[in-house]
Image (cartoon, rainbow, N blue to C red; front, side, top):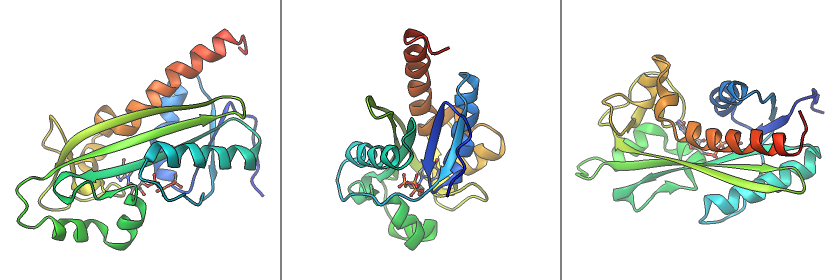
Length: 196
Ligand code: ITT
């Protein structure tokens, strides 16, 4: 059974890397959060928004506290958007080397990350998205997590993995964009409802 401390929000995910990137941003906005490590079965859908909505409803029903979840997709242009909503599964099965193999001889190496954050407190369900365009690298860099070693965001020649080592990933990150949108909305909502 998870120990719920008294926080503003509970971020529900099986992936602590997401929380490691999200928590400092929430904190900058004065939002206190806790990671609840839990894997939520995802519905089959083409839409990351639809998956995020469903995950947030499940997480809220489980905790009965205000929850935030995130669903991401990694879309490779010359593979018709693959792996998209199957990113987590494809990372675990093919890995970065498998993706690079699929991309051998492909001229168009464009790809993007999409993050959808869903907030659910049982009354309000709100979603915020962040997108980062970029390219697939030719080889995998060291470090990072997930597809970090093979993704070069636009306007830099460094991968997410290399940027992470320099504490610069956040500047480019799809996740930073969605969580900042959420944080701005959340603190305004809190002010309006006079919670603090
Ligand atoms: P949840 O329990 O929160 O669902 P998850 O890892 O299964 O965790 P997703 O279903 O959202 O998360 O899968 C998205 C996958 O995309 C994730 O597992 C990574 O492989 C990849 N990914 C997302 N954001 C990334 C990032 O910033 N850097 C590298 N890979 C990322």
